[in-house]
Image 1: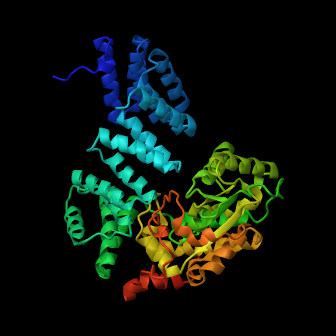
Image 2: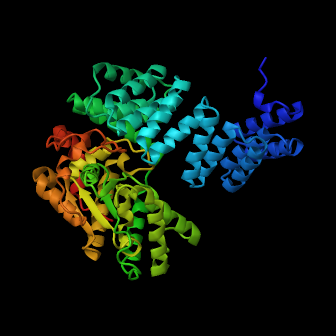
Image 3: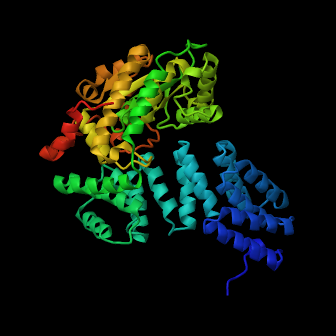
Length: 527
């Protein structure tokens, strides 16, 4: 017999049954039915917080965030010390974009109930996303202590430790997750991304055994395929590596197909829409910002690490804020970007620039300037001379074949993604180069091209040029960038903590196996 839920204490049995029925309806994908049942439960027991909490969960799933927040506030008025209610309200704040209130809410929750694992987990996850890695590690360690068998906090703790440069500890947590679930793709992904500690033959055997199982989830299968490919590459078994990467990407593309036609249409619209923009109200707006844009795997994390070693620059890593500001403006106008760009006035661009600066202000609390290393921001480079005309834009490039191959073998979590198919990679690379060339011609004083191989060949000269392009005085600390203590929240976290190395190229070792990719990169593809 199931023990009674103490959170339901004081509710009439009929209302308890109604709440349970609502929860089952939500679980079974019937949110409207769940809402009806839970609204009835609230109506019959308006003085009890638990039906209100369940109703708020339904409202959250229906994206009625303001109503969910109000419902949880009603529940908290009835039970102000209820930790779970504080945690759920924090989740609502986060969904509404109020991260300060969300973090305060989760801290409130764990102060009232230190054994509430979900609150520790959410606190740690969101602190990590905010770049507060050490605080995130402390919170996630609490979550793991409370639920040693739970995979998400264990894997996320491993990720946070990687970002902090504590690679051996991270590997231990990934291994602990695999001890619980040997087909945990996220754990294999984490281990594989610690590129300074290669996987071994026993790992290859374990990966192949898990990939042969029929009951492995597609997401785990894709992650394990990438891990196996990386392992085989490290062992010099290039045909096996290519086969593993190809199988993983084929499955991912089947699940999330990327549209080449949509990409071509976007490029044409973006180039046309940004050909003429109004003169900015304040030409210096955005001087605090250094954008690093271009292809993923093109060396941008290394360039950012160099800049972050400078005493005037905070390395903020890959920020979503520019895309969010543009998306919110699109929603406000009821038009997709970039269709509304020609209608935007100088005042509109000034407002949007200030919104971006407000969203990123916390990255300038310790140092006056910050980097924004979101590679996809190249798609918005054309509007920045109106929106953030004082900002510096650094486009990073690397040898095309090395870049393309590195993209193909890297698992990306933003899907659909161009990197799941070699022809799509070639088209995307050509489109990026074509657009950036035009935008650089329109704004040559602010958009600068820096090449990874040139940095390797002449480190001091190219670092000096990079700092000069950013309006920064030369500082010798930038030559010792690998000593900079900061959270690095990308797949290159391990490499950028080492001095410059000239042996990072991998594609040439494949020889004729990558001839199809090389041929695609050399074709004049129609945009």
